[in-house]
Image 1 (cartoon, helix red, strand yellow):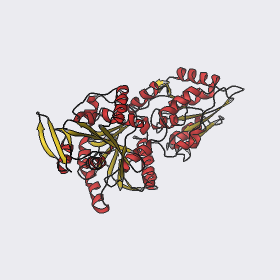
Image 2 (tube, helix red, strand yellow; image 1 turned 180 degrees about the vertical axis):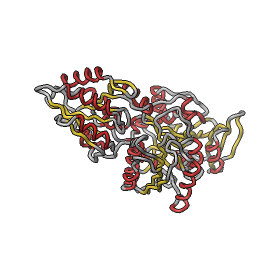
Image 3 (cartoon, one colour; image 1 turned 90 degrees about the vertical axis):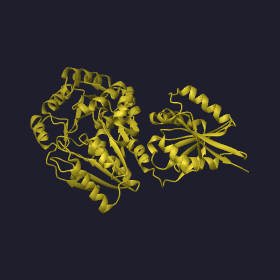
Image 4 (cartoon, one colour; image 1 turned 60 degrees about the vertical axis):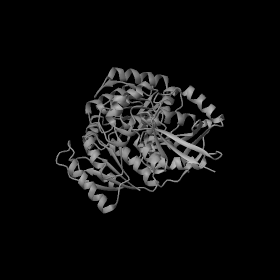
Length: 499
């Protein structure tokens, strides 16, 4: 399989988009995928870093703030013609529009969009937003995706970050190590205010080591070194390759609220933060609500007295174990593996069908309440988990009900199929997890379910489908079920099994 990434970087855009795409690409490459990046050549871009790891197709851009849809789609189409099909095209770019995605969808198999906003329209198979856990119906309709991956459990961090997770010991310390990291931000005044605030907290019995991360900004590095020449306990880093190791050794952080804030959460490092651009506001809100960060300013500015007060309390009281654990709860570092698991599933993936168990209650609950599943279901009401679990336990005990789970060979659940014995015979109902749709699994689960159904012949199997559920109607017809009309909106498909 081959996966493409459409992403850009520059001094203006920053490198966060590329960093998370490279993290995902590294995990996919380990699993045997061929990787290709499509990037514009821009001032201060990361194309050389990308090329050192993966194949990268570059193209010139006359206007860095605008995307030439026609030219880019033509370039990708040429690549596909010469090198072979793309199974997925992953887009992480604010300037790529819904029209661009629609055009790309005509030449690639599937579209995967990564975004940090919820007010942009898309045309994609999977939409990932690590900054929110829920969407309104209006937002979901605008995004227009088959499946949604929401929240920090899908954060695309370095695939090795989990190995750096350690428990921070509570209690006062004589020496503190702090990291100051605002990503690609280059506001000399903000860095100066933060560094001066940190160093002002030192006293005879307390030394503070500050690790100042400056990305690739050589000019800012030079100015800060001149400003703080001779000040002890300041270590400046520009484009370091051992960032995670440095971060893991720190006790507290001061910085922005982008991808780096999720890395700090994963490592259990409490942070004092400000948002430096508006695409960080959703993530900031989620992290504040979960008590993972403390806000010490507003958009693009530091509130120095507030920062000094917060840091002073932290330094005097020692490491806050509860704060550290709150951070680690929200991000476990397994996001790239979760996403790679999803992208790995295809029409050729080996699957198996097993009997459902009580332990499947939560995944069945999630499937039933999926927005897309309810849209095509005859009963569209949302369920409560307590009543759902009671229903499942009753079904597992009922001889007139047979419930199966479809999963991969390495036990990734993909969907469910259920047979309930009623007056007409065995009523069939099924659903496929929205993340794995358009892989031919609907037809496969029904075929395997019919083979697994235990019943004495003769018997009838039937399924009720809404008329607007085109995929299920197509599957039942392909499996030679006969169709009858029930009312104005329901079709009933039947199949008889004789002695």
